[in-house]
Length: 216
Image (cartoon, rainbow, N blue to C red; front, side, top):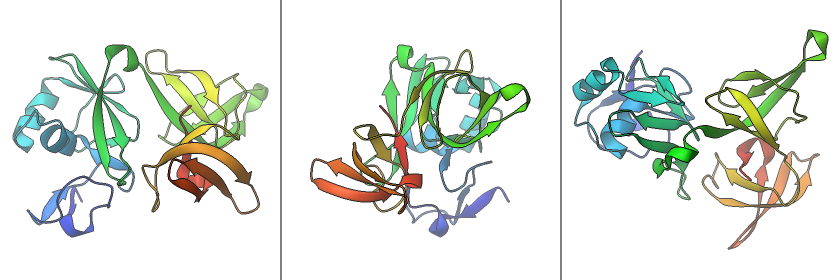
């Protein structure tokens, strides 16, 4: 099904719950992504309707992480980079303190990298290490990293530039749950409870590790 009822859209989607009965459903990651159609039409405001977005797609005017978009329903994940080829403008999907996904314009020098979280790690034949990432990528890497660490990916070479360890004093963002959008530093990690104490300007909070991503 290519559409969903507007009333059941994820709370993170920055669109009104009143309006047309149905909205487009992303081709992947329904709960943690945003269709490129909504981004172009409702957030960046470079198109007025679906027809115009389809035309942009057919003209190969839109890139996600340096790759041509082929479907206006394609889902954009957290920290993905959207490029408008004609204007040479670049945007990154972020999450604000109110828990809503949104886009921020970035410099061209920032458009070649993105951060992703390691959700699984496998040792393959030949003792090669495969890292399974939160955005669906599976990358081989010689860089030592652990599950829950983040990695900085070079979108041109499709290789990992460096590891961002999940340790005390690391800067993290909460990407889901009631504290979604909050940023702070790790004060203490509690492996038994599978959570971490995060220091914010307004005070400390406890967040499940699976809801955190290291960003620095």
